[in-house]
Length: 113
Figure 1: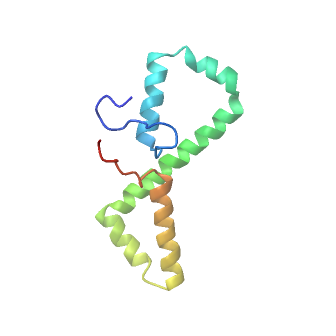
Figure 2: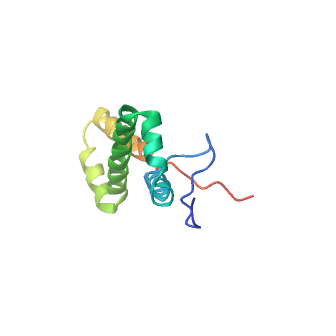
């Protein structure tokens, strides 16, 4: 699934789901096997798919927030905004961590064997 780009999905319970890898894999299925899409929708039903799409949208929003906070400008703004109380600083750091983990930004490539 990665075409040598490194955005592959690892086996179950060994992966951090990231928007790029997930959407890349799904788009390949839609392009290469479009007949699967109606079968999946019929089998699962529309409600779980809509629920799942909401999760993907939030993952994309988290990824955008993490990307913004990862830039120098984002870091500077973040540091200035947390210059107040310890409580505010704590909440801001937890929010930044939530963006990182919610977007799959905590992924690290395991060493090759």
